Every structure is written in C-alpha cells, then in structure tokens.
Image (cartoon, rainbow, N blue to C red; front, side, top):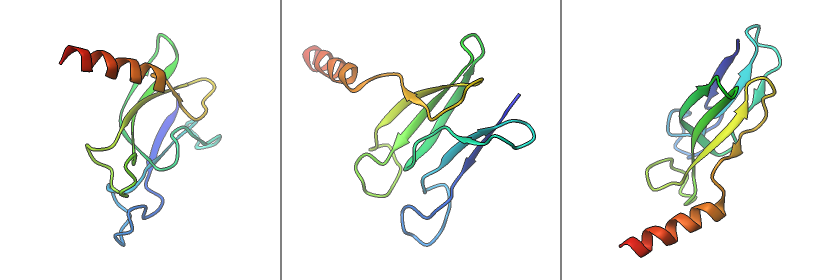
Amino acid sequence: WFILLGINEEDTNGDGYINYEDAERVYISNLSGNNTIQITPDNSQLVDWYIDMATNNILMKIRFDSNRDKKFNYSDEIEILKTSISSPAQGKQIITGEIKETIKKILEQIK
C-alpha cells in the first residue's frame, strides 16, 4: 500500500497565491509517510492518474507549461508518464517525441 500526495509548493504563476493554478509536485510514500519520492517533474500539473495493478505501474497524465506563460491550461502539452509502484522514481514518458511527430504527420495527411 502507498500514499500519493499532490502538493502545490510555490507560486509558480506569480499571482501572489499558491493554489490550483500553480505547478504541482506529486510524491509517493509508504503508509507511514517514510520513503517519500517525487514522481512528477517540476513545472507540471497532474491531470489524471491510473493504477495498473497488472503491470504494477502508476500511469499519470501530466500537463506542462509548454508555452511558458506561467499558466496551466488547455493550450499546454499533455504527456503520459509511468512509474513503478514497487520501485518508484520520476515518471518516464510513454509516448516519445518521435512517435508524436509521426502521429502529427499522419493526421495532417488525413485532413
């Protein structure tokens, strides 16, 4: 068993408040709160997550401030990351930049 914690630790958008509009770091720890490990990158927000018990992974939908406007919204890129439940570390991309470019080219041809 484990605990997932999402924490807004700083005022990343500079509006004077720490709230849901700022970056969020997600941590995993055991039930006693020990062995806390950050599993999302800095300057990102957790949008959604799923625990895949069959593969022992946590899948995370992460929004990055890709346009660097200090706001997290629909104009920013979304990534899917995964990390192991039994050996957690910062999540790794599932869909690489190369795969994204291939998908974009295919979609452009369809138009």
